[in-house]
Image 1 (cartoon, rainbow, N blue to C red):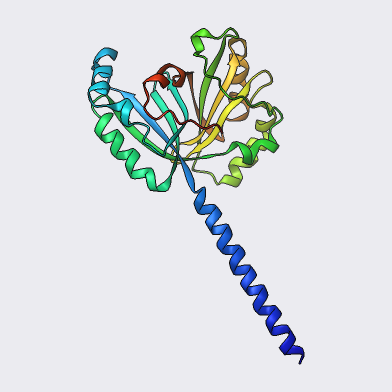
Image 2: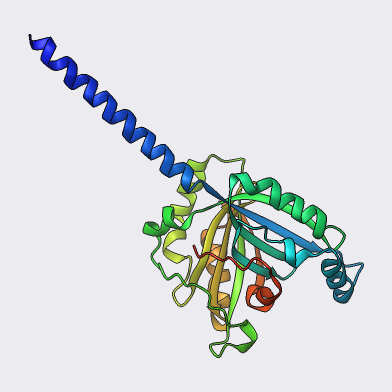
Length: 247
């Protein structure tokens, strides 16, 4: 009798568990989007007018970003080229690749890196949690005279992650980066490159950022630092797909 009572309860629990698992999987699939960082590196054997003509003739702005895809960031990283971070469902990966092959080649050399948002994972460790969302005003028209800085933190792969983390902790990395008076725009892991941090800061804080990196990031990372500006407000009117999301 005891087992006759328990068996239906056991079966009911299994059914509920299966349904909840199915629901979770469906939710995951419904929002199964990835980030993709794309570097568009100018061919400097041409001038900007020639590059722009190629993009126009090849319908770059009409086809990139593709439908069903959203821009997260579109920056000029001075010394590298344009850096575009897209949010897209995995099913659109081929579409993005084909759009760039057909409309960006000849004007740019392209590089692609799968990416994820690191900031929510490390936010609790940071002393300065200041984070900003860039508005639609072009940098040249802003009154606060702040600049953007893209910082690449490239892991030393001769060490384990635990060893790298210990160095960062011992050197006060999270207490000192970003310095007071600066704010994070985005903090991503660009797989194959390392961490990519975009900071907003007044020019007077440039030395503070550099010193914080030298004192607390070196040995754990090799670093590259590039002045940056927001290209999206400048080119948004040219884009057929103006979908944009914030992180």
